[in-house]
Length: 394
Ligand code: NAI
Ligand code: MG
Image (cartoon, rainbow, N blue to C red; front, side, top):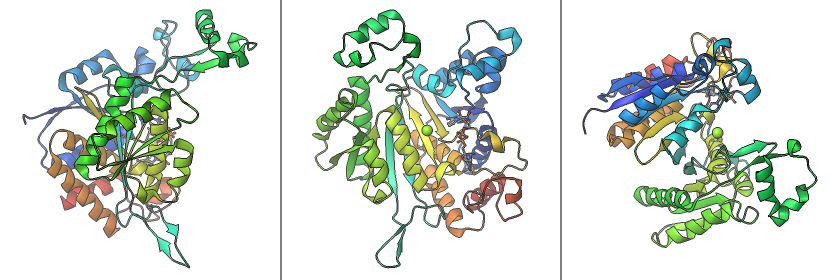
């Protein structure tokens, strides 16, 4: 493959800290690429009224692969107040740049692996028979539909009259007939058959390629009959081509309970946008939490890789930084996989596993310390020391 150009988007807060660490690891691994840094995040909202400037879109369109840190998002009203005077009153409305990026490039597959590293003190444990303690290995990969559902952005507080009229045609809307429009907030949950098909097909393909025994559709079709129902129906249809893989069907609420009882039973999980978001955070909590949760946003012709965590503003100013760079590095490994560099990705993951198992270099989260500047005195490694430990073994 020709030398790729990676669009790096550090973003805000700790995004600016962890992304450079991942680049150091990539470099040490011998990965040959060019990098071009692109603007995204709060600063560009405040100064330009757009947290995802067109020049960043252009770079992604050109190079097709992005590595993203994290951004800060704030509610609409608060965001409007922080606009610089020169861009105020121009009709700018804040919308999360990562959500717009997903929609703009139709990055409709969100893939979130949640795998425990042996020896991680944050791994899920449970009581077994008698006084025994079990630490079941978790190896779950969540396929979350990334562009539709409740995050489609089709929503109103105070819906316009024609929207109300359309809703009035539904018998169940009678219950809201007397609510004044200004007291009504509506967010649409939109699923399309083509997007459901793509996420479910990709989930099954992945399960076959990597030997998972089951694909679980995690929705709530007994209540949300139309949208969840469509996803489940697609699961049943696609499964016919994968007779060796079982199709399981769980409700999101029950799934959140079961994942703390028998997480080792699950393999690939597929869900719509919001339930995928929820269940992936749930499983991430079993394998170390936000310091370990990586993700890929993949479209037909562009892909962006990012840790699940946000900008963690409370740690933004700490110097040296204490946050765990592993989620970011694992996201970079997913990028390597995407670029066909699977061996290199595997080698980095193996090294991360070795650093965790050895246990000498641990960020504050792995030591279960409340975060703050004092964690270093208590034995926690800084962000760059964790990266250095990975680099030293590469
Ligand atoms: P967050 O993920 O930024 O941080 C929550 C807490 O998780 C932190 O205070 C810290 O205790 C822990 N944490 C996060 N990353 C860590 C790491 N690498 N190592 C160790 N501990 C880590 O979520 P929060 O505080 O809810 O949101 C902060 C900002 O980030 C908000 O503006 C939010 O909108 C934004 N956000 C952005 C996301 C993105 O860029 N994709 C995703 C989630 C939140
Ligand atoms: Mg989330």
